[in-house]
Amino acid sequence: MKTDPDRIAQGAQLSMLIELSSTPKPGNVDRSHDFEEIKFHHFLISAVSAYPVFRDAALGVEPAGTLIRRAVSAWRGWGLSQNTHFGTIALLVPLAKAAGRGGDLHEEVAQVLEETTAEDAVEFYAAFRIAGARVAEVEDMSLEDPTSSDRLLSEKRTLLDLMHLSSGHDLVAREWSTGFERSFALSGILKERVRDLGINDGVVIAYLEALAQVPDGLVASKFGPAKAEEASCRARAILGREVSETLRLAGDLDDEFIEEDVNPGSTADIIGAALFIALMEGSILRSEEG
Amino acid sequence: MKTDPDRIAQGAQLSMLIELSSTPKPGNVDRSHDFEEIKFHHFLISAVSAYPVFRDAALGVEPAGTLIRRAVSAWRGWGLSQNTHFGTIALLVPLAKAAGRGGDLHEEVAQVLEETTAEDAVEFYAAFRIAGARVAEVEDMSLEDPTSSDRLLSEKRTLLDLMHLSSGHDLVAREWSTGFERSFALSGILKERVRDLGINDGVVIAYLEALAQVPDGLVASKFGPAKAEEASCRARAILGREVSETLRLAGDLDDEFIEEDVNPGSTADIIGAALFIALMEGSILRSEEG
Image (cartoon, rainbow over all chains, first blue to last red; front, top):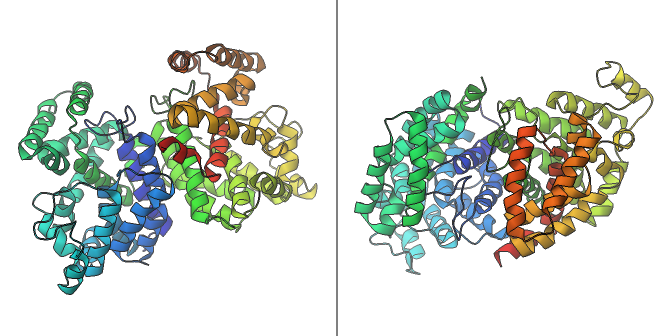
């Protein structure tokens, strides 16, 4: 049975807002603190303005690349000039498309990615420029090169092809090139943690586990792989204790990361995707209330 | 020119989320604290699930009472059993309908209220029961009386008529019966405060001013009018100082109100309505960024 497109849009939006709000989430904007340049309400704007894009994704009315560009462009209409949710949008758009088709979400999303074209790649790069997102450049496809669009089209490089090129260093690209392997695995962990700890603390612990597991791509692109590995080490160091103790230490780690400008944003993006997968399975919020 | 229904839905949703998030907002759930029974993410659910209702309100496809009932019913679909945003929904639905018509928002909303029927009244009471909202009973129209629906219909009492009956003690009903007089006045104050103080602090100061001005109806319904007047006094006492000092004292007042279970929720509802009015005029978020 197909899921109502509005319900899918709500699931995507809720996953962005729950990820945003859970606290303390070391190094990212959360309920407890803003950044100097990017504030909590900026993330509210990008989550709110993405709704019609997610609904259209679920309805299957536009290609993935166009939807991603539309979502990013919509921020500007509400006065938002910062990049907030680019990575999350790039993950949630194909997931919302897949959810709109009914059937097995994991299988459907792989199909959605396979269907992307060179036009999707052109639109994605346009979105990327509008958002002012930070990722390492794809080796032979400079983002500043004005001929890139023509090359993409003439060489018929699909958006999925490009994601494969970036999958070594970019966590969002890695999700695309593995059919969202990690997002699905993390959604399982997330469901367990939320069942045991409630929504806020469950999301925080799952985020720490994700960060401990895989060095964050955004931290690596800012400071290099050694610093990203170190950030993961520090997340590992506060896990495996009483939850209350881990949460207290997460507050300290948050202060340290902010001081050092260490912002594991890609990990937060993937937690957003994992939350969406869990929400679409229907149990995550109910289980907490019960 | 008519505004895009999706933009109106986004404005309504953003106003709920910005109101929710601004902190410290003495006595209400905000970014800094949950209540025991009602948590931050419960308010996220009610804001997210209201989106299609606001869009349909803007499209003019259903009567106000039906839309209010639909919004409240939608919470249940995401596992929310508490009452979070009932008062805010009752204010934002007619405002979203009015915004969808284009023209002067203040004049249009008066027209929307005039057009309500006895069917709207029946639907509103159904919504009220679903939400488990707390308001003082309308004198001769017991909410528990199973014959009320029949009486409403046979006596042709419109939803606006019923709001007039409750306007002495309920702040939301007072907005309906005065054509949203106070919401529009507060939106002017809000715009000035946000321009001067940014979005978070501007909303907090406007909330304190609103509470100082008019005793909160929800506090009165829980503890009686004397306690509601006292809460307003205490808000007055921390205003008229340096903003940083007022905000510090607002944090203390928040602790005290929570300890005393004083929850000025109707004042928060009206700030939500005022935010929507300001957002529809288009400047409030841009002015802060500029």
